[in-house]
Amino acid sequence: MKLEYADVAKGAAIVALLAGAALSSPAMAQSATGEALYKQRCMMCHTHTPDGRNGVGPGLYGVSGRAAASTPGFSYSPALKASKLVWTPQTLDQFLIAPSKMVPGTRMVISVPDAKQRQEIVGYLASSK
Image (tube, rainbow, N blue to C red):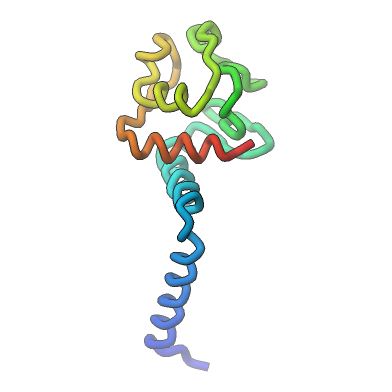
């Protein structure tokens, strides 16, 4: 059976419509956007899997509500260990603006200056328990 271009185009249009419907709720759209931003901005150093693996940075699955510098098996900076922070959506947001300003001496050097992107990433991180 030979597929014609029109058949492929129709199939692609149907897939696009179904994908749009699947992401129609705001929470689902935010989660998908947050996940995509996390993959672009954070995944080069941090994992986000239930097994708690660490990468160059600590694993971030279930980070919301956790004390800073508490992921087992990761070697944190003395500054972050001494910070006494608890990762809430608010502290994650503030940290991502400028990590070294919030915790001078932290090893985290990547910031997310865009407020909307931070909101999406923090929402994605907070959704994992």
